[in-house]
Image 1 (tube, rainbow, N blue to C red):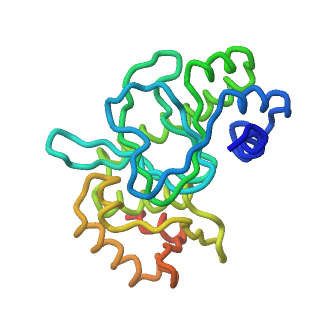
Image 2: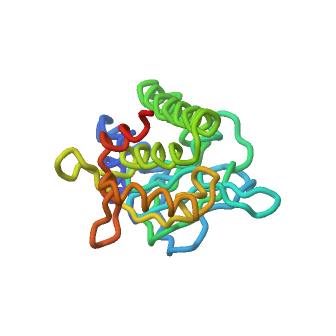
Amino acid sequence: MNPPIIQENLKKVPLFKELSDVEIDHIANISSARIYNARSFVFMQDEPLDRVYFIESGKVKIYKTDIHGKEQIVSMLESGEMFPHAGFFRGGLTPANAEIMKKSRLICIPIHSFEQILVNHPELCVKLFRVLGSKIIDLHDRLEEQILHNTFEQVIMLLIRLARTNGQPYRNGEFKLTSTFTNRELANMIGTSRETVSRTLTQLRKKDVLKVSEEGFFIINQEKLEEEMIP
């Protein structure tokens, strides 16, 4: 993929959408693009961290594994999002695995070169810090959910979060997720069992709080889900 095409694709990334063509050119000149097939890995946990990736299209799963091989999904990322969020101005190792869930086109930028652009463009640096700040708040909220809420409530809060991060307005105040999720994937996002998630989803569907489209996408009524949290 040549620089002019990379430039056009970078303009679609929320982090860069307010930059001028000249500023985008600087980033495009240090960028490269690559197509990854489903089930391939962009990187593995604890590999040297030297690049940052932006998703032009596709779906990427970020997850960690413990010494027993148990999987903990950190996030499911789609078009316009970046990863990993750790590593700027400090280096180190990749904090998790990045697996391609469906064929993806990624724009790759060496972290060292990207850091130099951030130093030269403070407004971009501020925007990046806002992105990183939102990720920190999200992780804090997830930890609080696990401490203060039972598994039924955690599944509900997960669905609300997915409506916000992976959903689009549908109808009557509902949100339709743009990706499908298996019960196992949902369970791995909150550290519970597939059976617990399946049981909770069944209850919510019976109450007409949660629906599933013909294509298998969740249709979420956030207001009704929040009411399920009220004792």
